[in-house]
Image 1 (cartoon, one colour):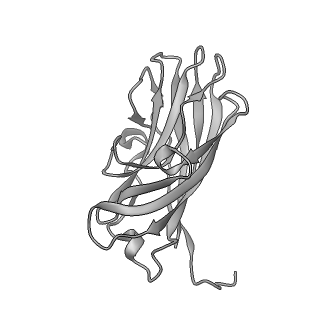
Image 2 (cartoon, helix red, strand yellow):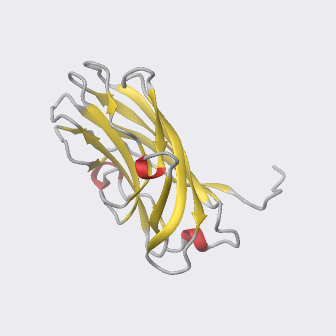
Length: 196
């Protein structure tokens, strides 16, 4: 490693237990729940301001789990940065509603992406801009078995409402379009890397 830029990649978080499987839901729910995985991954206040070069500072995420479905419901994935357990904070990586295959059981899914600060705000408040892009892959979703992830859940992935002055928790959430005990999802592995 040359250390040409003076930046590091470091593991910020890796879970030691799987999240609790979620089923029979249609509202957005956290799948990195405290009951299953323990304390949520978080960034301390002003994490993005703690280096001389805030612009371009960010993190990478790798998440894996399993999903099942009856018929062909949709799953919508959202990774939010904000208060613990939030289902309304800024979406830093999100998908469209993804149709599953018909009657899939315990199919693996993988969610990978990066998020970087584009325009830091000097003052406290939900006013820092960043951009996130990534990919979700699973044989359990309809062909082509992959989908784009974007900040704000839409291309080009820009989100302008990050509050860097608070402790920001990684809220890994999912919404299902149909409530059934057979429509279930579980987060089994979550890794977050600081790119600073």
